[in-house]
Amino acid sequence: MPTTDGQQRLEWSTRFARAVAEEIRAGVASGALTGAEADQLLARLRTVVEQALEPLPVG
Image (cartoon, rainbow, N blue to C red; front, side, top):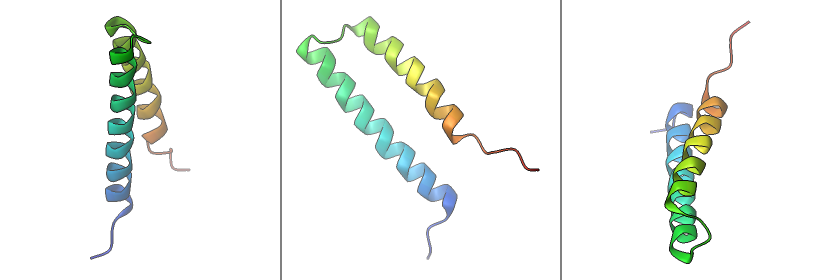
């Protein structure tokens, strides 16, 4: 069964989210980020990713 574009995007976004979460968790564990900074960073990244994944307008 061939992979659909939507399925590929879902898989990519899941891998990306996990990688970002791991890096942020490591940053908090090492003291490079506070919990509040991590929350703020995640909120900003969520906005960027949502905008990047929005379908382009037709026409």
